[in-house]
Image (cartoon, rainbow, N blue to C red; front, side, top):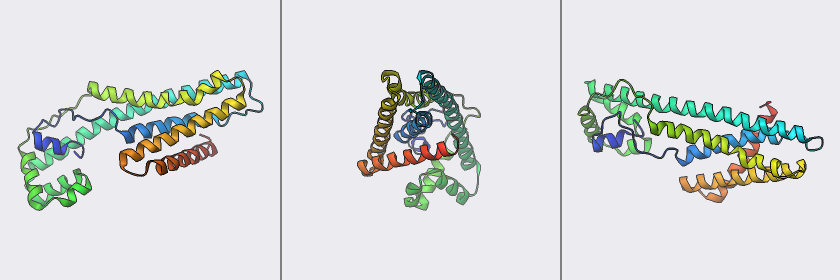
Length: 231
């Protein structure tokens, strides 16, 4: 309800009609990119460049690609589960708001479904207006099948996780020396981490350069922790 409640009230659209939004918002894209980079780096940074031969590098590349393919698929499935679960939650809230005779209970449900900042500035009569508009909505559907747009979102999740592996793995394909390839790979990863922080900073209105540096440091720490825990 927090994503779709306002548009349903204003436009009086059925609850099961897909809400128009980006397939993945910037926060989701950065999160998936960060996850994919960390998974790839747990393979590349544990390669012993002093003793690594061609077969070791090949094994590492297949491991990194295979791992991100698997986790990209898992993330995509959970993306679909989350989307469908959210729609069922929205429908459950709408049903209770429509049927309850307790106005205070209805206002509480609406308030929890809205972003906190929006809910904090609404007056009692505003909540009542929203409640009356929601009561006028048709009975929500009982089932919410996965839509083509949902599948597109799941595909985007998979691709971000999988494709994030390629820039980190590419130096090992095109550079013969394992030592130099590792340095280039790590440099590419740091650039991508910094860029993801800059993109997130621009989206959230925070200082882009500072958040880029912060994201880079967070990524390095997460990789170290993941390796230390045997990930």
